[in-house]
Length: 519
View 1: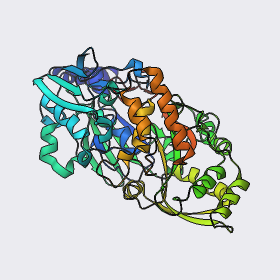
View 2 (view 1 turned 135 degrees about the vertical axis):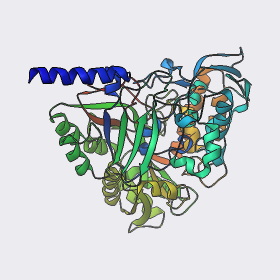
View 3 (view 1 turned 180 degrees about the horizontal axis):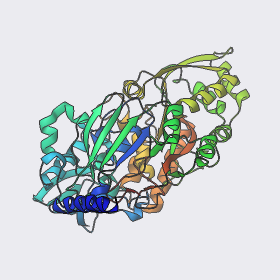
């Protein structure tokens, strides 16, 4: 029998040698099974990927000109990605990027050129073709100097030029030819240059990705990724415990973290950025066009109680309309404290002595729904009845951008500079249902001059002062009510090695790279 086994093994090795297989190639046959709290993906065109569900998977398929170092969200650690080097003019308004040669798009769409970069950034900066167009307002021109050189000229300096060109949001580079050929279907059939390419999407089941063998950093060690849509926390957790998943979207909940840490051979990763949850109040529509109702909402919310509910390891109180740790964050803004009695008094002053009922559209995404239900109980104590209309997550995003809900619970992380958060959520240009819409659900514009002045200032201290003033104005107008900042949580089998230390991820999920492997 030993002789037969030896002969069979020898034959197998001979075949492997003949077709060029080695240990790495065998590893490429492995499938990473990921469980996501979702019914389906929304838009996989990276310039429209706004939900956590979409952002996580898009990051595996696309690159930017530059990138955050894997496992980091520190802007000081931004490094080359599709651009191998760059330089800027003395006044900081002209930037030249030199592209890597030989970078290949998925699906036989050819080599990346400057034309693709110019097309991608113009697309990212156009409201009709991007959810992040406001981030690129300061760009005056983008041109291809030659096939592998791109020049970008700014109208005005911005606080985070490299930030808008990273592997994040509008900074992702797409194939010009693929977008033009596929048209409206590109959102479900995208083409990038990343370590993994989309194979297919089975609605309400999974998105299947395959390794990009021509990836410029080397062929990935993982062969496939099965990104499975499992909206039920219980079903997803059971699948993980039964070893049907290798990586599981976790709940930022202390009980969940403690229980999952006890599962054998499991690692729970808790990492930055903290997603700041805000109740955005539409100041232009009843009942929130009355500031007393908005103030009552603010007094009804108890942030300390929300942190106790979510868990000390995974959350912290929101202290402003900009997340903590962002350049320009200020807690000196006059945030109203929890005071249900004062909330009731304000409602009475506004003509609602018996309380008020407010209807709001909300997502079924478990983590967001659970938190909103706690807020619902807090509001009830103050005389505010919240009638939640719960819809699928992609539908939620569609409807809130149509202004169909007077209040919008939105949890988000952005590039860690105050300018981007303030601009996207609270600048007049970003109001939903306008040509330049982003995510300004409050329709506030009272701090536009401060936000604009800070963006172009070349004095760092002046920028900070203006950002702090903007936060005071927006908080005093109760454009939104900050709730909590929730850190990101994923559970993984201890045989999944990311290939880096995970401290943070701007894509809101672990970055799966060519170096990631299943041991």
